[in-house]
Image (cartoon, rainbow, N blue to C red; front, side, top):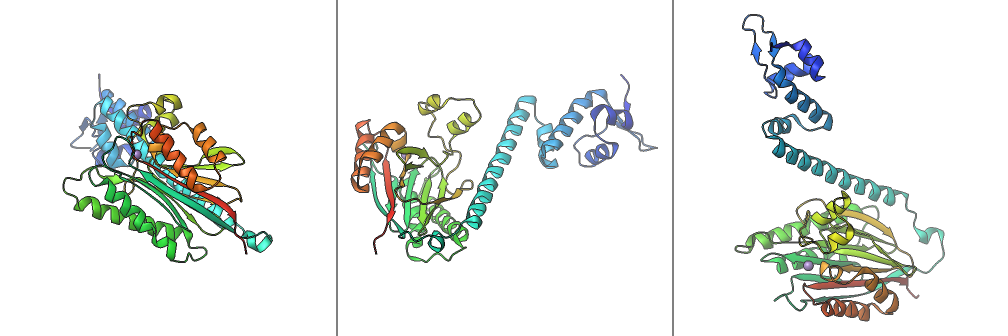
Length: 356
Ligand code: MN
């Protein structure tokens, strides 16, 4: 079969002659022959597939350098590369969506103290962490104070120091005042400090590759709770007797559930359910603001609880237990009664009116 002129090839591939000349210069799509005298480009019909792929990848928004890599791969590897690219795009979009939501919440919020005459709100809280019945050590860290609630689940050699370092780095939020309007920056700085602290710990540990930690923390501002979350620890909210999971697990199985490739039931018993897609320092944490309501009860927990105790059981305990202290005790006991296969950490915080 004869070679096509650039005009005919452009028409068949739905790329403009201008785009074809650019792709030639970039080495994405080299013409089969270039006339040495006239400089006219000629294309082989077999090059149409590649030209169409380039056109579709351009439409997808893939950068040219990455298109060049994809075009050099066989079909299976190219498919995997496109999937990986799209996962990055979605993660980036999700992070920006969260940021937009955070800013909208932040800017549209009115201080209830200015408009209402209700008593100021405060939190009462308890934290408990336990090694469980199988693991030799406890790599979880749980913390609760007047402003900060946090659970971190360390993994790998050095996972314990990593989770402790992450929570320690956030503890300065307990003492530093939070300037109004500066919450997002304060949280971002705190997370950056936590990342640095974890990097320091994991790099210092000999052979501590793969070590790291999840981090799920809430900062009480006096009327709202700011949430920072990365990994597979969770936050549940008990409100009016109903239990809501307000965090999204950054795990492989959760991503498969989101894509409709796995049911929630299959995910719960999946052998790789603890495989993390994000952890502290690897990916962007979710940031969110929650308006506090009197009577709200928050639970922060590591997967040592949520993996073995059904959410209906969690709801029952949270609804039936008065003080935070016995609630965390009973939840940890339930995890251990289910075999205690993992370290388990629980933080419970109640939003209530403060007297005087
Ligand atoms: Mn765990």
